[in-house]
Image: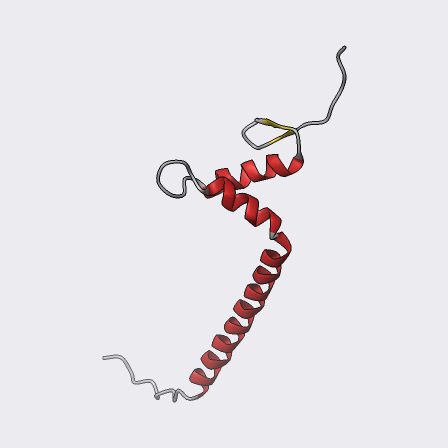
Length: 93
C-alpha cells in the first residue's frame, strides 16, 4: 500500500530522507573536489555540520577581530594625517 513521507532536496534537486543528508550534500558541493580519487568533501561537510556551533563561534570571533583591526587602522590613519604638515601652496608658473 502506498503511503506518504517526508523528504528533503539539495540544491541540485537530489532527494534525501533527512535534512542533514541534504545539507551535507549541499556543503560537499560547495567544497568541491578535495583530494585525489574519491573526494573528501562529503566527510568534511559532515564534520562542518556536526561542529556548526563551534564554527559559527569562530567566525563571530573572526568578525570581531576584523572590526578591531579596521578600527586600529583607522586610528593610525588619523594619527598619521595629524602629523603631516601642509606646505604653503606655490603659484603655478
